[in-house]
Length: 157
Image 1: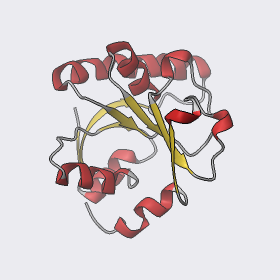
Image 2 (image 1 turned 90 degrees about the vertical axis):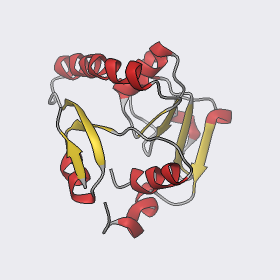
Image 3 (image 1 turned 30 degrees about the vertical axis):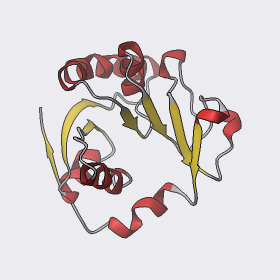
Image 4 (image 1 turned 60 degrees about the vertical axis):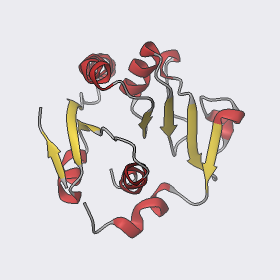
């Protein structure tokens, strides 16, 4: 969540309407609350069981569908949201996947339009062809460390 704070601020400053969704896992909503970031809670973590994880992945994509249809986003931006990738790919919404690990497993429906990774990550294990990959210096923590004492609110629905 902290990674997106400066990105959301900049997009908003430029006049874009930003819709933030969060899965109820790994204290994401709690961190959003603490930072004052308004977000829509969609889905949860389904544990370590691979069958439940896969079912939860597609269930969250179904839960996101009404939101995507209603809001009609021009871009889906995430840090590893497989459900978002699946849904956006099915609905023809371009996606940007921010990633910091080049060996994550993704199914064909999870291919992003673009990927943004730290410059230390090799393009060899990424999902996008090299011309669709952008890199930034440092690591993701460098993006948000200076903003740690700002933002906080995640509505439950």
